[in-house]
Image 1: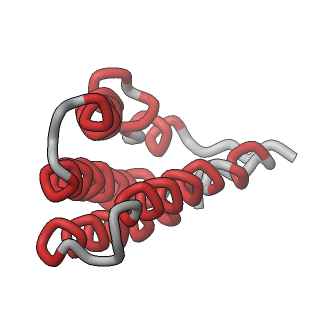
Image 2: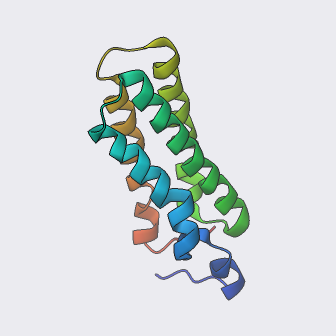
Length: 125
């Protein structure tokens, strides 16, 4: 069953607007992912991932408020918690040398899974 929303709701969805999607999610993810290939310390990489996930989480929070996209309601807290966990790694060198990898893998897996309701036809609340 397809769930359609008025044009007003879909028109306000930043994820459906290429420039907004690039600014809120594409660039932060590219910067964070790119840090995996740069010569940076775990602490520096954790700060990069923390900032990137915070920007993406803020984008999802604002997008959920703007257009009530279900994916954003799920992804926003996941990304913000991931940003907090990455900041803890950066501040305290917490949880060992692979901790950042575990945090980013868990956060990105959950964010990917948050698209499942959309695949089942439920894009907006």
